[in-house]
Image (cartoon, one colour):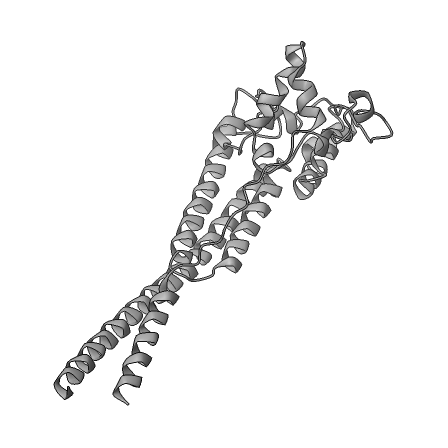
Length: 278
């Protein structure tokens, strides 16, 4: 009977230790094969065409496996360049300044809709030449990286722009929301490392970020101000929930550690009893 109890306690202790270890998921880092777009442009003598490949390799598009055909169409699987860039293959070439939002909107649908419905979109419909997605996000060609507010909404890039009355103030709002988002996500990462699944809160944070981004791309100062306040309130509420769950996770870990310690002591006591019985 004592031997059975010893084995049972040992199994229970191992199970507790195993459950306390965080789950690590394997990530597939496999990269797609080189396309005709890449191999052909890399071999271009014309530097203006060749430079697009190394720029793209350093971009957030390459990081997320978004290749040339996602924006420019065509069939990168065809070895012949002319066939790859043919009308039959769906090649689109480069968009004009009036088409830019439609091109980017294939992936960034909500942002493009806000841009089109906002002040810049209205100006484009009236034939007024205004900034487009490329103006702010493709200043370094195809080396498109994560947006940094201070490098986009500035008086240098937007001289005399009637849609952004105070670029510095707008940058302040963008920085404030970005900082709140980064802090919340970092805290979520900490709690999830303790074994608590916060997928729903991570999704809620993403929704706040995307809602604010949509408003920003409509370029209305009053709307941006209101969206900034709403985002701040949303992040604060989510932060309170994360802090509560973090406290609960710590309590569970302390309870688990206490249980393991108690069971270990019991295990040692049983071994001592066994030795005396022998």
